Image 1: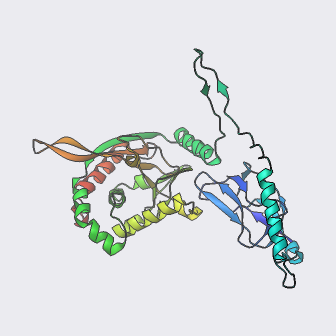
Image 2: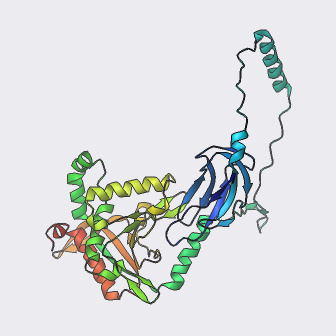
Image 3: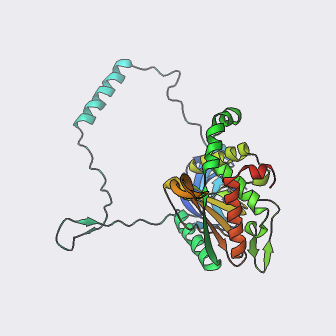
Length: 371
């Protein structure tokens, strides 16, 4: 059989469909091995579909904006055409004599023709519908744009989370002084030794892994009429990209060192922003962390990432007056928010988990001493 099928690759866990964003080759184009043929977009990542064989793109079964499923055939490559295709002729034949004067004359005539040629009218741009101001003043513009496949599926998943889970959020605040002092003291040595910056995320990942060991429901999820518990913790770290929010997963965080966490988070963030994430980077998270503080958020209620049962929200660090030993002092404070599925996690467990996270961050030496 000369035809080779172009199939949709496997998507991330719990993803059963994607959108064909665009074909990068047209029907009848020559195709080489590893040429990018098309782009598809799921609710988490954008993926490229590459050619596994050389030939000619024979047929397109799906088109831009069509919904596609893993394993679905979206086109065909005629490999026989590659074998019979003629090689492109070289630009200059060895036996050909080139008349330099004639060539120069042709180039000069072409230049003159371009100068005298009237410029072609530019293609009209699509303009937004115009709506007159009600009071008769300046016109106001209104523009409509189709939602991207990514945005539509994010909207669907988040609404499904609201419709399915009994979401509730509990709050606390943490004094970040101890963490900031540690970072200030050791960040240079840390980077020199490990080649990574010592950020806040590693402290929060460690704090959540430490706290979850005492509250296993935080790291579990509901599957039908069963509860699935894990003896490991894979934390999804929310990363904002130009196309939307993605949540790549850091595996076995309880077994990782601070440097391994920082290196892992940095690597996933770069892949997310460069469009280099693959489905395995997004599969199987058991808990998530989102940091709205990088955008200036002081307080928010994060939404669950199904089928997970809990998500921690970090926020901006602000210096505020607090009471310590009956004295008013200024400390760098951060509000924490834990959204959880009340069907599985009781309020007492959620509050105690968040308090355990707070205690770890305010007294990081406790974890070292296993207290």
